[in-house]
Image (cartoon, rainbow, N blue to C red; front, side, top):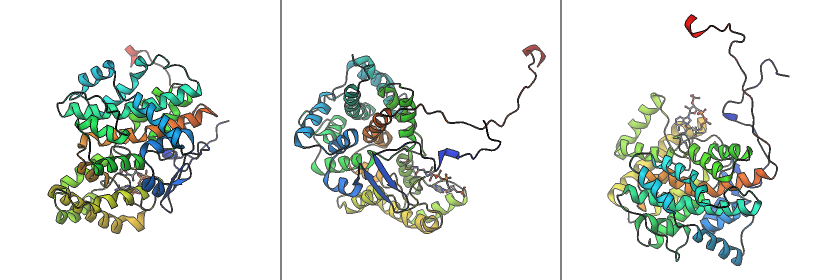
Length: 382
Ligand code: ACO
């Protein structure tokens, strides 16, 4: 029976949709754990391949399991001619996130077991997706720079191979470390918008390719994965550290949102932003441009915390310091959001695989507030 005035939870805020053993976000104390391991411990000691295994299988791998997992990731790195054709037809004409989404949704064409949905096949497809999203994103970046597809390098780990396929040369140790760290920090974050969207698609028993395609589509928005790109654009608009205060105050007075600040769950400093900030300020060999961007970012951080931190719970989120750090390792702005998808793919897959163990179709309600039984008039009488 429908109640007269139900409680509407706009944006599903505060609603629990499932039990999960994947990720805990403590938004009050600014803490984050993947499968029980703190993000600080994983950032310090682990790498993206190991974190992907942890998310998909629920426990850290031993040496043998790690080797087998890395081998499978490598096996799927190479792109098919179908994928390369899609990318070459779209690059330069569509947003990189639209290109990535299209290429991922076309992958079943190359997978003879695409519609086999056993647990083993779904785990295999998840590993394939982690690998392909990275190779596709790197190749989009290459094509945006007017260059052609580079085959993967089997000697390199996942993160280093991403930079290799993007730049056509082996990365140095610092760049490999930074990109790997960024992937670890973005790999998982509970039922955020894109993960929820992947779960909704999964809950219809559509396959994992469809679920990850939904995740990518949802990640694109500036309120979610697109925020780092927009935060960097804002830093460029600000121009100089001295202009930061005026820019922030004018923006807030005009009710504009400052990208890279605020979070639905964290009402304090995002622990991932703290780790990224350390990398930003610890780098000594920045260009003048990067030093300027870093100075603007630090000034904006202080100002925003002063204006809205303690009073409104609006603090830097994971996206605020990411842009300058990506630039420091040569990642162009257009790839920031696709790179977020590279990182988040294991998180999306882990949630869909977990949800399938106790699947129930998502079907929330809306409360209809329109008219009923309106007299129908033929088009000629309207
Ligand atoms: N700058 C200025 N004001 C803000 C900001 C911000 N970044 N974020 C929230 N506010 C203000 C809102 O204007 C609103 O003010 P009001 O009550 O006077 O109208 C109040 O704070 C509450 O905002 P909501 O949008 O209701 O809060 P919500 O929990 O939905 O916000 C969100 C979360 C969407 C992330 C928001 O903080 C935002 O738009 N941030 C900027 C975009 C961003 O950085 N997104 C990345 C998030 S992390 C991620 O997805 C990986």
